[in-house]
Image 1: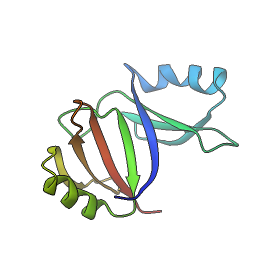
Image 2: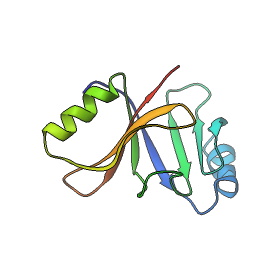
Image 3: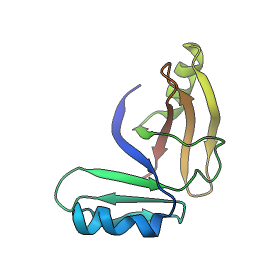
Image 4: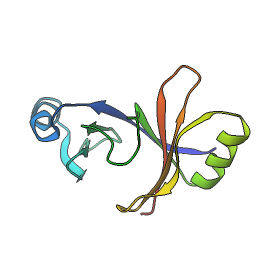
Length: 117
């Protein structure tokens, strides 16, 4: 799998309430996107970002990070071939992301995603 970016997913009780710390104190730009349950905040001058997540809208578990790839279908096939637990099957979400969740051997759940730009 070719990884194009990795973004940390931070569990927060309320996205709107958490934004001020990350924007005002850490200097991240508000916001690359905000779906209510997830918002991505980025740096205005560096390739740095974080996602604030209250709980995934469709997957049964939350992920600790989102790994973007340009071949999510190939990554899904490879994860299956290697015998990794698929927590959430390959799905094209209504907000346009094609993704699946896989459990790493250490127990962390990882969101593998492809975003059409």
